[in-house]
Image 1: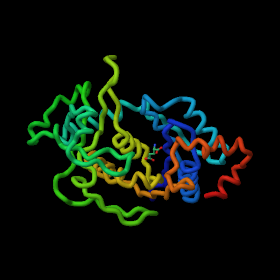
Image 2: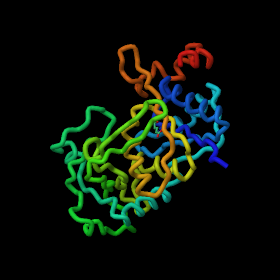
Image 3: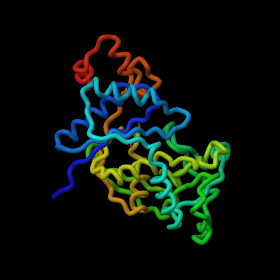
Length: 281
Ligand code: GLU
């Protein structure tokens, strides 16, 4: 029996859904339903400064209003032990290391950051251990420090064929470097173990929920290369990928949560119906 199609909607509850998200989620929903598959709603609520329960509630209501349904739900903040296990696995394999660089150190990094404002700057490898033995940190105590994934030094590209965007090639050492997989605790509470980065949490969840196809925005193509490296390091399968085009405002700027005028809430308050919205896609 082939594996049934399993997809996910993975909103971050950090603001109101706008047309751009709605379009991506609509495509994800359609692909899952056409394939007679299963669809998860996954709350990516790990940003303590920006995630809010009222946005989680609002996005569910907005998606339902638009006619989207899902079969199961999960919330990343309920799953911290799973992400921590993955961190331990990477530490034990010598594929992760603690990084003491502050934000200011990173801003002063001699290597230029990428032009994409949402992207993590290329790390200057300041805390990267020189030899494998230096990786033997105590994996039981991931408190008090950030951790990075050690990307390969060779120049072999990560290749994948996106179902919408076509063939892709990213070279880790050139395109993104050693990226954050764990952020240190922000409080002195001994129960606060810090948080996984988006890259790690996404890979663990996609694998443990058996996602067969990831549908998301095209801005995450480079993250897919990072995530494929993590999948290989953790022994997970790589799902298929479908990266949708991004909607832009009339000035050509990518829609973001700050575009309140194009939130589903605002459009709905102006009298638009779900059919009107779907007709814009
Ligand atoms: N939570 C991310 C977002 O709202 C999507 C991540 C993903 O689909 O992998 O942009």
